[in-house]
Length: 421
Image (cartoon, rainbow, N blue to C red; front, side, top):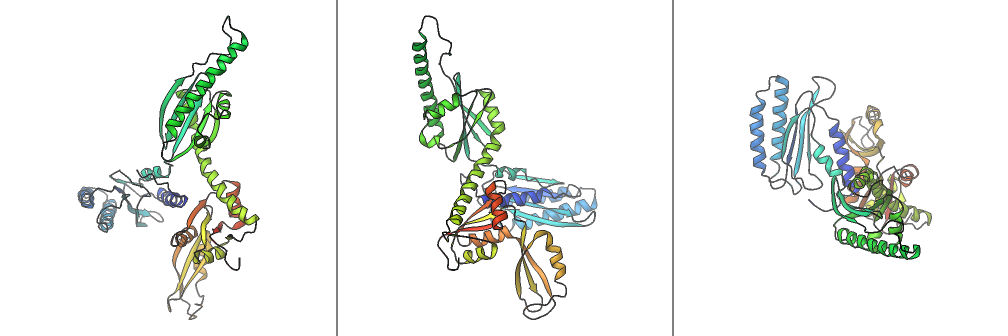
């Protein structure tokens, strides 16, 4: 599995496609899903589909048989466009999707190259598309560390996606606070403090050895019952690089396996905060430039398009909450094209408004919508053509809401100043 971190744009695009596919339902078991990993021969997949085509001839329902066999042919046609599966593999979804009740089915085909390698070879004919294997790619594959500390013992675990591994468990050897008979209270406390310090050093050394060498180590969750975890943290026992990776400190009732499970139950929310922190940092950089009037930012679609075309954008910021389309209208008489940005829900009204409208170039009344594209994808493609970083910002943080409400959901951090800004 590739260790390359998926960008917020890749995750947004994949999530949008899978959400769309998840809404598709066939009238019967007529929807085909096929996963072909890199290294699998295209000819093997084509042979398997020929066999499935023959098997489909036994389907009793005439319409279902026709739709399944037509979908298989469509998939075969798409597969033949590839000499071999791409490096990350290939996924094809195809089937007859009802548009408005029975008899309104339309054959739809979707070809995806996953953002990271797949190893699954799969064929399914069902009433839905099988996207769950791609849904897994939406999960962060970065490694997280879990360190539970108490005066009784410590547990070190790692978490990657759904994979949890308890790496080490240890007993502290630290005596309780109750003084043993025959020892003075002061001497007993000195011995106990020495043992506790030695234990903390031992825990930290194991944590450093386990977590520091890990690839894609995203953060450390410090946990345990009582105040011991805070004493451990304040004592600066961990390597400074690891200490900076502490993303949360939480209370648990236990310190061993049950305690780890408590952390895992809370981990999705904790890990989600990591992306929020990244987003907040990006937005704070933008707001700093705004507040100090440095001339190194701009916002709004028109202005951002201008600086993108000038190759002046360092980071393009797009709100995930944008529900806007970039629409191309074309004159059927002279071919004149015009682009306009409209809200997605107003597309039908806009198309109706073109009836009788004159072309700006030849005055013919033959304007039609020839292309629609999500504005996020449209601007992202423009940015990618100039090697500009793109960050898709959620609206679940205060800064993310500000990007949408105060700056129209479109902003840019610039490489250099542009005249007129």
